[in-house]
Amino acid sequence: MFLDESGLHPYSFSTRLIARAMPMMGMVLLFKRSLFCEPSMISQLSPEQINRYKRHLILPEVGIEGQKKLLNAKVLCIGAGGLGCPISLYLAAAGVGTIGLADVDVVSPSNLQRQVLFGVSSVGEDKVKAAGKRLKDLNPDLKLIELKTLVNSSNVLDLIKDYDIIIDGTDNFPTRYCVNDACVILKKPNVYGSIFRFEGMVTVFAPHLKNPDTKENGPCYRCMYPEPPDPGSVPSCAEGGVLGVICGTIGSMQANETVKLILGIGRPAIGRLTTYSSLDLEFKTFKVRRDPACPVCGENPTITKPIDYEQFCGVPILDPKSAAETEAEVEQAKHPVIPSAAPASNLDSRGLPPGYAFKPEWEITPREVKGMLDRSEKFFFVDCRLPNEYQITHIEGTQLIPLQHLSQRIGELQPHAGEKIVVHCKSGGRSMSFTQALRQAGFKDVKSMAGGISLWNKDINPGGPQY
Image (cartoon, rainbow, N blue to C red; front, side, top):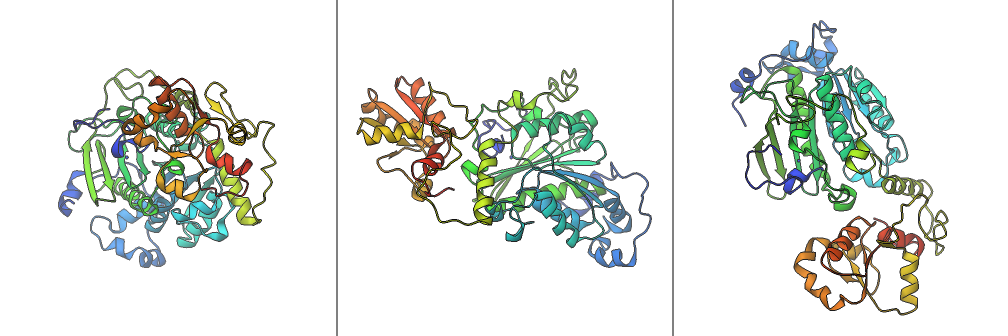
């Protein structure tokens, strides 16, 4: 990772967010020319537009000509979730003429904590369609292109080719690498943002443009993260949580960078990564350099077309567990039912969801664990979630040892080294990491409970809380 800040480790602090004031006159002089909008399609503003955008027009750095640039700009926002909502809201309000919005998901109740485009009436609706209604209501002049699709190697070049700027508001590593590579290949600026828990980060990846400070070509995403993290090593927002208002902070910063690029004003964040910690109200900026050996934007690129990003990252673009959770949330919201004492009917003979890739050498099913408990078999049962998760729902008899505390508390497990140990978390990812760590430490009989307490509360404890 080409960051000139010692001790900063990939995927640690806000750089893992994966997979992160200047004088007015200086802002104008550093970046004097718009890089995108050719001779305007809109040559003059209507009286209604002058009234709508008059707070822009009285800014000398924007004015009539700048507003025309915004109206003629084409921006693609990939992701209509926590980041995509504030990004698209502010770009539509600013008068960006064409906004493409790409997302394959539908609105679920748990989205409403942070995805401010949507309301209760939107639950179950395609995000791009629900977003379109709100954005067109905000600005009827907007041309919104709804793209209900997964962005992958087969379609990414066609999707982005007609846009001036691409905004990455995604939440998974395959799509981030896919979008990055396509932007480098087609020479499109990639306005990148990510969030996790109480932190976020923003930068602009644009190897075809100059870093305004060094006058060297800017970096791309791979210059900062040459390799994806090990599958399961970086928790998603669904697993680790996210403070809803962080989405507004980071998304607004991405929208701001986009507007600067369109207008050709200010100092674009090319070659600078800005991180934000909401708990400290602290911003930090790190310099990010282009890697001459980068396989996409380096001196001798070896990746000149999109690759198989799911294979490269070792994880799917669309997490089946997340998709199933969304479907269940929407169904419950649309057709509320009293929790039943009967187990879920869509499980196989082992009590596993269809298509679950069960690993018998590493995993044990909830039904097998229930059988062990019923037979009073001796084993040590560990819950490796966080205390706040334990308070939401837990299995009686488990010992709470959060994965984050394993290295400090492994001594508590030594007396059980000769016993069978079963570990569970919310859905199986953290418990698998816990299991692997114990085996590496010499524990022989350790297994992760497949599907975690989410599956337990569907099959063994039907109606138990799902979060």
